[in-house]
Length: 259
Length: 259
Image (cartoon, rainbow over all chains, first blue to last red; front, top):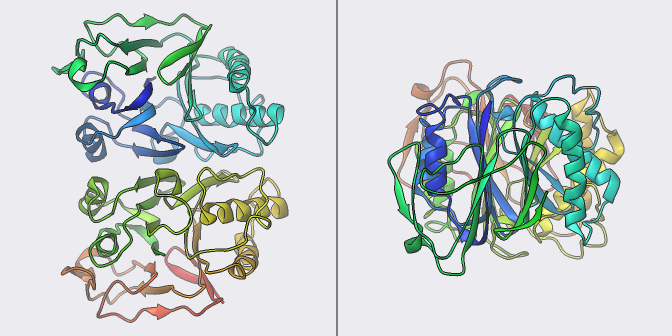
């Protein structure tokens, strides 16, 4: 299995605190030692940092923990390989372009008997994971249904993705994070939770390492920041635990679809 | 304008030495302060590090200079903006997937009156540079001509790209680096040179900063490493200067097409 982390915010926000907790699970407090990755959106641009080595030991993860990149949308993943070997091409998140936007995706879970379903041509897998192929298939279905130009009603697109995710969940465990850089979707198969922080901000303490942050000192009263994770990252806050089949759509930190 | 750097090697090789020289041109010995990026292929996987700030000041560039990532193919670019604002989405190299491979591209030069020519739908620009749109157009033409599966004869694909590059050169200056992770193509409009290093290896001294390397200590007798750059990076070696309209195709460090 793997662990997911994502963020949606209404102001460029760094994810150093949450990533510090997650990275510990890549070899210290968790067994997810088969690579890790993190994608930051900055405006329409995005950049992804990846390593096939454990996040708790990675030079690049150390940079991410010490160098605050301010972003409106972040997706991160630490991997414990089940399908596909340990290699850079099998490391999440995966990114493809559609409608002049970078779409980024990460998956936690495992699928079976999926090859017949995931027929693709426009978007093809580079690696050999079930996860990447499912992502390619989702994008292929979106492009087939909505055409070559970005529709005005993007919520309709994510509603369609939810129906695809439901189909995929029939093949196994499918906890998914997906973003086009503006919207952030989370789909729960069995393990996913989230928290939305807004004023009045308080202190939070990581579960996985002895770090405390006082968000009141790091934010302004107008900030709204949602963090999504496989398991809660802090021990003194109330995380919303998602139920199997639930999905949420966030934009600028706010929940815009709650199903 | 901008500067390009690329490498093709028959063994995973780090580019720390060459990148150290190039990064100086991003604010110290050169005026290319509007961002930089570098893509490393490791097997079929790839990872790109980017920053919209000058390479000479970038925390991430400092990591790349100190953390040797071993790669068979590398593409790097430092930017002095002409078309398109300074932002992450306008920072080269650009990457798209085709035939289950990541294709990576960087461009030096400037094009005019290109919008009518570069009609795209499958591959669309995220940013607003002439460079990225030209890349999207090239991939769109490749997919249209060769279909949805990677042909056995990849050299035919790059020969076709050369005809497209020739068309693009009619619109301005088009020095280009393109790779699918296996092949590395360089197309010269006015400024591009390369060097192939093989045994017996010697010492090399950077032009842009006071660094000397003894390749004999860093290599094995079987290593073949080609480096491509806008201008020579070392002062005591003979770089091959490409001529306008020339293009070269490299694979595993060796020149396989020389036109």
